[in-house]
Image: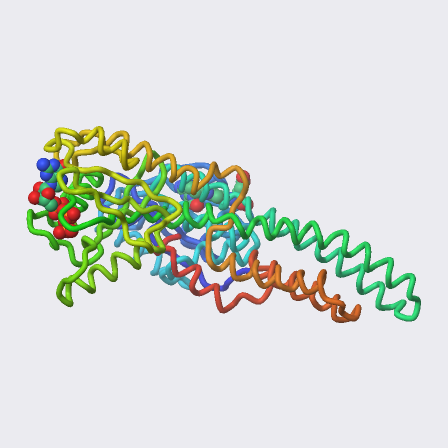
Length: 438
Ligand SMILES: Nc1nc2c(c(=O)[nH]1)N(C=O)[C@@H](CNc1ccc(C(=O)N[C@@H](CCC(=O)O)C(=O)O)cc1)CN2
Ligand SMILES: Nc1nc2c(ncn2[C@@H]2O[C@H](COP(=O)(O)OP(=O)(O)OP(=O)(O)O)[C@@H](O)[C@H]2O)c(=O)[nH]1
Ligand SMILES: [Mg+2]
């Protein structure tokens, strides 16, 4: 599938930069190179050319004739000096060639998808690779962009198609009970283990956690030093600190790289009883946040009598930090008694141990990334629908026609994951994630 328009856009971001890459894709690409660069260089070899008549800049020109290009169409790259003026002049010169227009965000990837170079999960992986902030995110996004999920889902879909073919063959012999029973058993032998694999895949939340960041919430009584700890971990002043109890009212978030793992750290209002409406709302938000966090970092003040967290904070992942150890002479004893990591947000003492403990839980939650894990709600939604259909297939006493239909439903949902079938409504949302030039 090729378009009749030719698109152009800078691919290298806002600049200025040493070098900018301007991408061109579509049937008029050859005409663009002939008009601006005096002809096409050897395919897939960089050539230094004068760009523009009169000269705009001297740059490296790359020519990728279809179908061996990123989009699968005729493509070119103009690698020029990365100033706004050069980029703008080159883009305008390209737009002077008949049949060209500016690319929309994500349009190059969309063309790559439409010409079958990438499936939807690879497109999503590419979006995540461009957005990756930590090493573990980069690794996961790279694997996905190279087809880790595509291979998994295509494999599953192929198995379903086999089971479906068996069931449908059986339908032709509906009056021969032994044939029907035999294909039913054979189809079951495919579907039952597949269902197990899908269930296991769905139970693994590590991919989503890695993509979105592990949510850690700092909570505790007022004035314990939660905001001070937030600032110390973020290594900058993100939250207001004061000696007044009840300083933090709303939830404040920062994104951190915890030894390669992405973390969203949230500071919350101190939790206490008998206060005004605004602080009360802050506490309500703090508790809600803590409840759906992946990890609660409970901070207490070593100079105060030790505070037990309120009941909803019996969180499965909780680390207690005993803060202000710099002014509490007997902190070590209290820390041991209450299973706390003794720290001082003020001097930084104990923070390394605390970060180590956080990292350990984060690694356990995010996992080693060995198995390909789903990374988006879109994946989860389609997989749950496929799983439900397969469960009906296995568990319900259905007529063979209805069993075959459940397999079709499941296969269709797997097909939507990779984009081989009717996904027009999700395409817009996926490609809009990209910037112009991608
Ligand atoms: N200058 C430049 N650097 C870049 C890109 C680019 O487009 N331009 N990329 C942009 O994302 C990434 C590299 N990804 C690419 C993926 C496929 C093809 C490509 O031409 N594929 C053809 C030919 C494959 C071959 O001959 O080996 C194909 O798939 O048919 C190019 C770049 C990162 N670096
Ligand atoms: N000596 C000492 N003082 C600290 C330490 N951490 C925080 N403080 C002080 O304790 C007071 C409260 O700190 P905050 O970080 O605002 O405490 P908070 O828990 O965010 O308080 P609220 O937002 O009101 O719930 C401030 O005066 C801080 O300077 C510490 O490790 N040692
Ligand atoms: Mg605070």
